[in-house]
Length: 269
Image (cartoon, rainbow, N blue to C red; front, top):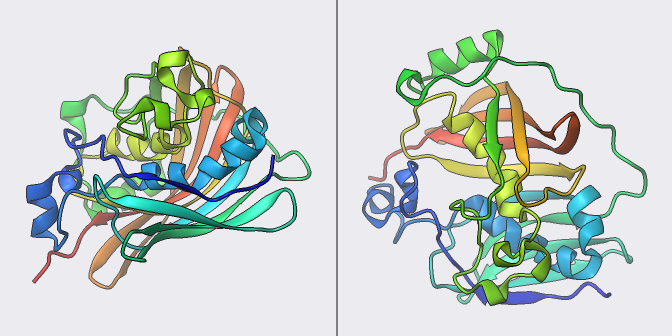
C-alpha cells in the first residue's frame, strides 16, 4: 500500500494523568491554552500512515524519529502530511487546522535488522510513596546509580489504550476493542512511565524521541522496561533529561528509544 497523508481530531486521553500538564488549569499556568495532548499520542498520529502502509511489519520492526514542536489540543483537527522517500520511508508533519506544525520527523522501515539489547537485570522501581523528587541532584545520582525497572502490562484499557476518541478512527491492528496490538502511543509511553515511576515529577513535557520497534506487543503482554539517564542539561529556562530505554516481553526486546523530556518547566510570565 502507498504512503498516504492522514487526518483526524486530536484526543487528550490523559486529563487524569499524574502529569498535570494535560489538565487545563495547570497547562494555563505555563502559558498554554488548554491541557496538552500527550506527545506520545502526537507521535502515534505521525506513525499512522506507516501502520496503514506497512501494517504489522512496522509495529514489529519499524523505526521513527519525532520532535514535538508546538502543543496540540483536544478536539483540534490535524493532518499528517507525508513526503515519501521511496517505498519504505517518509518525512512526516503533524499540522493543526491553523497550519501550525506541532511535530515533525521521519518514519521508515529499516532494511536490515536492528541489534536487540539484552536485559541488565535492573532492580525494580521504588514504591510510589518512596519516589524522590525530580531535582537535578536526584537525577544526577540516578545517572550514576541506575534507575529501577518498571513492570507493566498491555491490557488495552490504559490512558494510552486509545489515541482517538472514537475507536473506529484507529487502525484495526491497534484497536483495543478488537484485541489489537499495543499502539505506538502506548509503546513509546513506556519511556514516560519508567521516568515517572522512578522519580516524583512536577508538570513536565515529552520533547523528542528516536524509536526502534523490535517486536509487536500483543494484548495481555507483560512487559519489563529498563532505562538509564544519558544526559541532563538546561536550555531556555527548562531542565531536560535524556533517557535510553529498552522494553522487553519476556527475554525478547520489543522496543528501544532515545527519549528526551523537559522534567522542570519554566513558568510562564
